[in-house]
Amino acid sequence: DQQVKQNSPSLSVQEGRISILNCDYTNSMFDYFLWYKKYPAEGPTFLISISSIKDKNEDGRFTVFLNKSAKHLSLHIVPSQPGDSAVYFCAARAWSNRDDKIIFGKGTRLHILP
Amino acid sequence: DGGITQSPKYLFRKEGQNVTLSCEQNLNHDAMYWYRQDPGQGLRLIYYSQIVNDFQKGDIAEGYSVSREKKESFPLTVTSAQKNPTAFYLCASSWSASMNTEAFFGQGTRLTVV
Image (cartoon, rainbow over all chains, first blue to last red):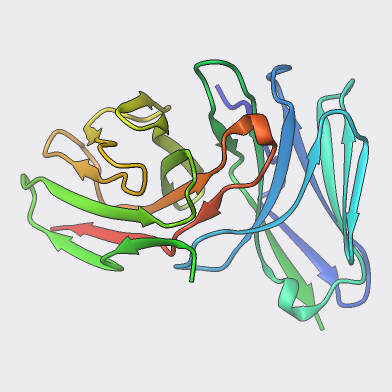
């Protein structure tokens, strides 16, 4: 059973426009959420995160929004640039005394069109 | 330079042989993780460890084994019991989840079993 879901396998966006990547989760114990960017045959690189006590976090062109009641988060990239073409993974983390998993979604491949 | 190192980048093994993938970090991180990436599957958690001499199974632990004898090292052994070992393996490390921080990834090891 997938605890972190990215329902769009791919997304194409015109250069300069806004890219919106979505993520849903099922485990209400998750309290920290992360977005990673990945190129083929490389390790993922961290982009931006958000704690469950916030509903928005912004870093340059990247903004993450969290809707806890809907168990939904989204990553906004504006303006989109050619170098943004990559696979984006949503991840969630829950902390308890004995469990410190980081669970990833299946990823969304973003294509930035010229 | 601080970081997380996986070696080798490419690994070939014959079917039925055990193989060990190396993961070393000098970030003084408490937690370490092993993931497997297959096309269309995202990153699936194999094993994780929060402290030395302790580790927990992830979602797809069958056919794998790990050890955490030192804080810096978290090797993964792919045993002959793993039915589909060919994949891209990623190691990550982070501070404890109580600190709400991201995980850092190595560059990955591509294992091909022939």
